[in-house]
Length: 553
Image (tube, rainbow, N blue to C red):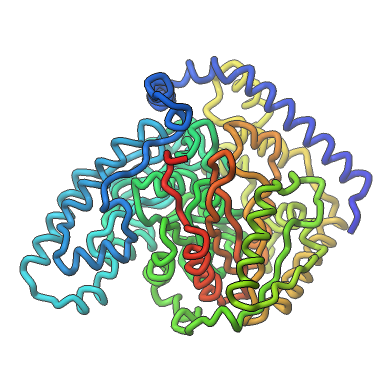
């Protein structure tokens, strides 16, 4: 489907508006920072680190973790705690110390529960000292006994805030746990706190007027992604080892990519989404997924099992995967959409390195494919996100969500208020509201794109079957500098299309770029074949090194 003249005009207008907003934001950035006391501590810490650091690499990144406990997977930590080889209190104290060390620089954990976590650690050690259960029983009952975990702030965690970056919700305190939070706690994990996200979880830079901006641990001047950006960031900084994120357009996978960790978007409907704000309604319930984010690949499957509960029976995680028998497909870019940036050369090379390694090591043939409809990923996602469900229920508009069940926000008025420092909303949220009001497809184009989504899903499912995986870029560029996503607002289409298709996807790190920024790739499988992408995650970790310590470049 070629772009119509109207669509080309829309592209030009949106690019112009994005550029204008970016220029406006650059002019106002200094004054905005001065007006926002919530951002000052993190900004001051970054400046102090740059001033006191002897070398350029240390000035821009967090210091590398040094304590051995910070370098173990969650599975290994749980094993050592069960065997009484290490005390739970020592693990939790070590992680709390690491958060206190790095959080002033990155602003990832926006509210902690350190005192409660220490008390829970003592309870774990007391349980183990009583010796009532053997190791296997403990593993079955509490697979993550004593393991520290962090939670995206959009999820309800008892006693902690649940604002999702919305100023009008800054005083909302959760009185219960989201389903996935309850399950990880029942599995023995100990939450250390909640992590930052973008305003209303609808932008791929984690910055808001409640908690401020989160900085990339590999380069403090770069973004962490969104909306689960704080989660990806604290994992990469070794302030946590496992985490909970959510994903409706790439909100697990983009932060995992920008921060060089693993993130898994499960097959739709496997993990419950309740207990988060904003939650999906209408047709968006088919697109929103809750999933695990981890520093180490071996933690993905056991954490997914815990989060899914009985829903795990929909998957085939007990099937042994022989990668030599898997059919591999490769697509290096989306085909050249005018809405998104071209794929970076270093990302293309990393992608090709994966293909070469698979063919040399496994003796397989990776088949290049050109799926033409992927070129329209942004348009498909945009139309499907705003369409009615089978019962005719209309989704909430973004401006309605900004009002949080009150009066809808007027984006144009908020833009004027923002220009004089009076708006309680971020410029990306205001821009999204404006775009929502201005850019609308005709019913005819809507129908074409909805039909295209269905045919693309059929094509992808038939291609992958039950034994195929697709290698696809996680994002067209490495972590950009703060604010610059406003000039490339549709690059999230590389991840968002798979929410519409309902397919399982795992983002896998592939080392660092020449600038010391994480590289990565998406591994996609057919519905309910999550076991294939998770097996590939462990394989690629062994082949390419997985997570790389920040501050060592």
